[in-house]
Image 1 (cartoon, rainbow, N blue to C red):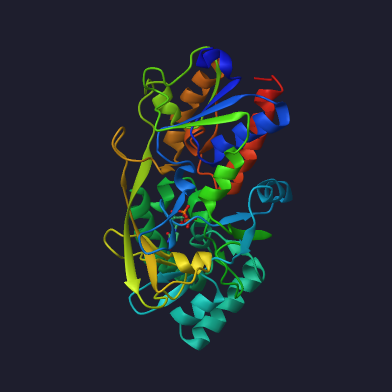
Image 2 (image 1 turned 60 degrees about the horizontal axis):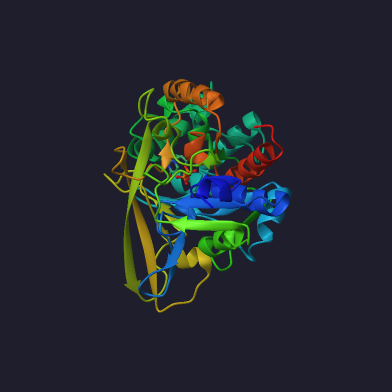
Length: 378
Ligand code: UDP
């Protein structure tokens, strides 16, 4: 039997989106699925591994699972136990470390006590206690004191970080990007506020391996979907790679940002004030993550990753982030129209749909996509 006849579905990419579609198709619908992955491991950019010092690190930067969806939490809980977790981030500014999202604790550190109190009162009376206000909105406040505060936060925390991360000004990006980290009008230092936040207790790779561990799923590692023999022709495909690459860049390459990572080990105890520290004014590094603070692992030393964003070079670097702008959305629509016309292929995930998705959103989208495919509406 040839590959084409052996499988009901070929999934390109063993990241979280591809794994979930494969699992749903196999276990809910009894489909035989082949998952093709060009890397030598599953898990995509959520993959983790034990480093040479015995510490579990995230190969592609920190991943923290958080969701408000009980359906998504319950689905993943079938494949992992969880370690409850609450992510915290501090921005390293010239004089101090301040909690991010900027909140009343940050304001206390940035201003004198009378000024901080005045600002907090004014913010609460304008937006309400506990409100989360995007920085770009706050900069338009009609209240000069609020505007001055917003401009300080914008200039010290958002502007340099965002230009370094995206190569664009905050205003040039879809407003949802900076709105991910709003100014929060209370003393909650949590980075996320979702109902459920946790780390898979044996790691993301173990969870995704378990998702793929099904008698009707075969996984082929180190195989490029685009190489000769990579794509079994005639079989329905679920593609989680770059949609522009799939269509040979016929409407031009979509814009992505890449990352490079430097991992550093230090003997002794924990060294960071928070699991993630951001460095808005550093010339090239955006943030560092100390993994033992995420995993709760005990060890004789501590491993950290430092992230360095840059422009993505097609075929050379890893596309980590679709760059969401008006122009890129319009360009993506050209590819989405191609996708609609294409027979036998469906697109899913961050790269397949050119969307800045969190992990839970990627899982939710994959669950829906699997139903659409398997119920024959595509
Ligand atoms: N951001 C910032 N300064 C910070 C943290 C975040 O300017 O100290 C902005 C920046 O534009 C970033 C966006 O907020 O890209 C979203 O941050 P998030 O931590 O959600 O990014 P991710 O973890 O997805 O890279």
